Length: 182
Image (cartoon, helix red, strand yellow):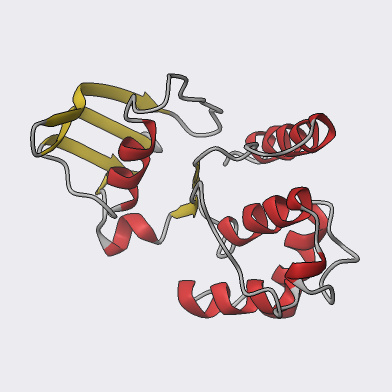
């Protein structure tokens, strides 16, 4: 089986700004990898290239052997951007239902219930987003990224703006996902 993620010689320039320079990385199935670096180091750019949201200037990236950004790669990928917003009036279940439609997932209500349970929001499916704490919204975002059972999960700053208890909760969820081979 090919690596969950591989990139070779990845570079990205925005005009005169070199955001990435010759990045090589390989992530195997079930590995939990964190990218560390100061603001502006290119972490988000790397994630966006793998998702197909930004094109590399040089090099290649693949998701499970498929070119980054291709339909085949996107079907294996779950993504939580650093800055995300859900409509405040939407209920947690509605957010997941919308993302099921976008992802072409046929998991239905069972998938939504399982995902909410997994992220510790089993009782929040009927709660409106605007009534959720930042930590709850972050966990809802994680559930959204898991719609369709992706094999590779890319999370950009998944614990930002969370209190210590929220950070621990997200890390525990990530450990559980790693145990499941994601």
